[in-house]
Amino acid sequence: MAGLTLGDTIPNLEAQSTHGKITLHDYIGDSWAIIFSHPGDFTPVCTTELGKMAACAQEFANRGLKLVGLSCDDVESHLEWIKDIEAYTPGAKVSFPIIADPKRELIKQLNMVDPEEKDSSGNPLPSRALHIVGPDKKVKLSFLYPASTGRNMDEVVRVLDSLHKAAKHKVATPANWKPGDPVVISPSVSTEDAKNMFPGGFKTLDLPSNKDYLRFTNV
Amino acid sequence: MAGLTLGDTIPNLEAQSTHGKITLHDYIGDSWAIIFSHPGDFTPVCTTELGKMAACAQEFANRGLKLVGLSCDDVESHLEWIKDIEAYTPGAKVSFPIIADPKRELIKQLNMVDPEEKDSSGNPLPSRALHIVGPDKKVKLSFLYPASTGRNMDEVVRVLDSLHKAAKHKVATPANWKPGDPVVISPSVSTEDAKNMFPGGFKTLDLPSNKDYLRFTNV
Image 1 (tube, helix red, strand yellow):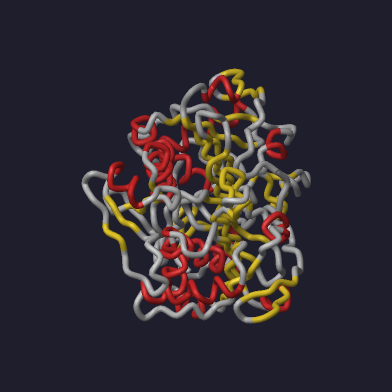
Image 2 (cartoon, helix red, strand yellow; image 1 turned 90 degrees about the horizontal axis):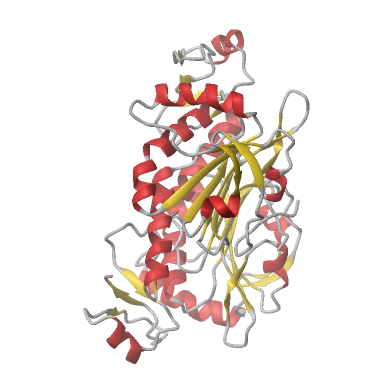
């Protein structure tokens, strides 16, 4: 199935949510945002995921990020289910809107369908899709997980920090990078420019190719 | 841009690789597989990622999984670059094939294009896409990361263990699950059936809804 992917502008969909009617672009405004789907209310993995999302709300807010959830259940169901989520995750508050998409129109447009999963009436259900959207409303990074695999909020926070770092400096983050680890200087930066841009210095690795492309620094 | 997504069968593409000509379905055979792209040879993040992939090769082999890499560089470039990867990651061997897609035909079919990145001639470059493919050749899970964010091989191994667990038992893994943690019983399993299927027992959580859907067990 075709669908939204990296670099695409998310459609400016209007939707009913637990915070009333929202329009995606207006909701995101000039912020970064995470739009994520879950297969269904009152199901086990989803309850643990939304609980983790709620528990991370402050970390996301610190990063100037807005959250919006989505499933095909209706608003009334979402509101009842939030009581379970908050009971399961003491101290966490589901302070972000959860969209209701009972007609399955939005999940198709947002590449959030899990073709392996159907409800009891044979209707499609959402996957565990999670798109990180920039202030330009474009998809910067996506996770597409199936119903059986709960997401890892530590990885979500890690990639957000990487995206923010790259948006601010001419750097990228190596494999398995964690905040605080050295980053690498983008190949588009010449060694001469790097000296000015990274006055704290950088370390160029010796490699068999003798190409000086692997340059670590701290920013 | 449209593209391969969750549940789709990967196209049976024929490609040149560092292991000669391969056909994707034949290469995968009856195994699980990871097909992953990188923006370019002799670039910093990619070198760290391929090094991690090579270092994890035994963990992947233990899980009966085949790896195949892909970028738009040619086979000669890949072979030269492997020397850098192995020098950067002592002890690691790039034992899996890396496909060459200089015509950019495969990256389009495999939803591996990063529209934000172009080479010096203005040609599209691959994103850091990673698809986990089942023995049925269908996409089970995808990561779509941009050039600036190196992937996290610990997360890749984590989700593989989750997928294997779910393929073997009627269970799913909660948010932030790690191997060894309890899993949850699928909603499709009745409480009566669960007693037979999980003779070691399970723990049902009390929730405000009084719906007994959050059932933890160990398998």
